[in-house]
Length: 379
Image (cartoon, rainbow, N blue to C red; front, side, top):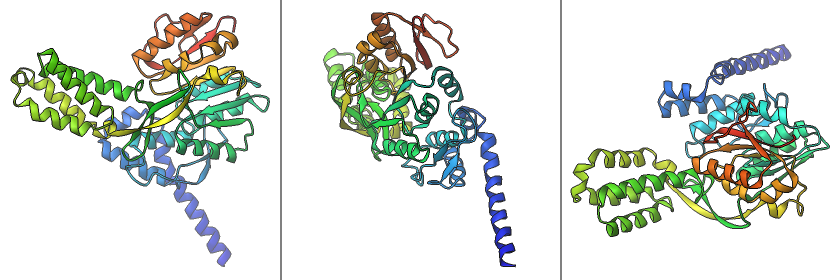
């Protein structure tokens, strides 16, 4: 009798878990922007978080679909507060364990990587694409994964270990144009943003907005320069609340404010609405260029995936020698217009590469985009 009751209890628990998964599985097929548009940010966050908890954070599941189908995936266990992850992070993590995360990139990498390839995963995040590369490169190939954030590095190692891959090495390093030290951005709750301060999009956004505000509020060059220098210094340290406070102090005393009231108020409101994004501190981290590693500490790559939040131009500059000598195939995600221009200029300088979209159609202009494929002539 007891055994029958236990069987019935286990059966009911499994049924409930399956039922909990169904609505999220359906929603995961929708683009993030569609779901986010239909419900307010806080409600979207709570909804995603509750659904993820239904899968028991910290547990190991099999990836359901996509190029990683059948591989094991450990769901992160540190998603219990709004400080540790945003709703977008939670959505991405759910898409990872379902196998629906960036499906177009999955298909692209699967079509490029061949058994025996040595792949570099630069900006590996939590290792979803690291696993994909390890699977399709096979035991005669491998992956060198680069990720500066300690928590992400540990997550990658766990994913690699539970899948028993022996062809993956993980390096906790910032990859850039030169070997040395760089300022790396961290949120004030110590949640990493994964970008270099000087080249990342967050500081570029602040620079643009504060420069516009300086033009609107100060007609004299000397006052404009002083305001710009002081506020950018605060912004570079993530002290956006002080930038807003300082601007509010001077705006009502400024005769130009009434003339540009709407534009100034819009920028201040923008800073307030995005205060979490712009509240950060920086830490000094070791950086390395690929040219300093390849041929010395590491074997040359056959394929490089590059996703470094606006620092793509810096990484490409730091691997010019590798591109000229070894001609790896590249997949580059472009986060800023500046990075897109730097990538194109460096590839033109190196020569011997054609730039394609993800359908392998040659393109002349590369702009900020989901990604481009850079293929050596003859491959």
